[in-house]
Image (tube, rainbow, N blue to C red; front, side, top):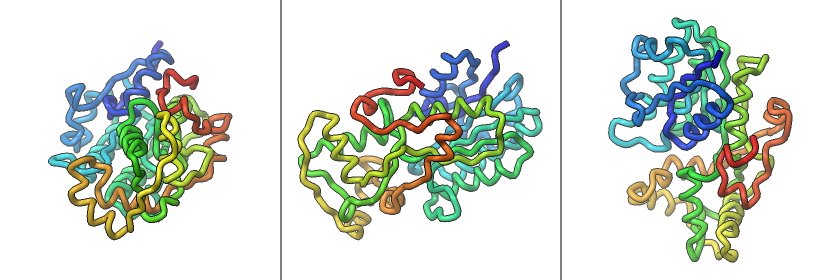
Length: 288
């Protein structure tokens, strides 16, 4: 008998990859997103979730926005709706819940994005459930919105960076995030918070140069932007991309680093080192 997974955020980059991988692994998927007819921002009470949980064995929540716009608010989508979902899981007897958070949603969090993610994580960790809180670093791979933005930046004649561009990152390929989620579905050890990052620590400027090389372009000069000027430009920049908001630039300045050994132990292998072909593959076209 097929196991049924409720997948929220099913139309996003991670959601699409998870949906395809779950179906390939013979899970029945119940997708939840605005594209599938459910407004997450209105699902603020457990009673709204209970009909969707009938017959469900596992819940995966991967709803996330990188910037607020209109009715799309961090507190609603990242905190209130997930909290209602987790309470509904308790009521419906759905034991296993996987929460996709973000690297940096910890005691050092300072942005509204990370604080709202951490609030949902804390809520889930307080429930009587078999939970997993997964905190991915910057995810790259074919079809990702952030990857497309960074590819466009890397292709410019001069690559814009904040300060000296030496902010350290540990980008992780979409296939490793999906593999980790799938492992959560049958892992004997539960109630686990796990950072998901790549094995390589690389400076932001070097990451963009690698993306440039992936596009067949030679190295480019850096256009160094002082942090104060980058913040001033974030106002008009938000109209070009939500990634260019001030809080997102502050998160970039803070960098991303994590110990990958717990992830390697959980997966039974090291996460993939970044190479040029991986920029153009998704989870299914990369052997999970």
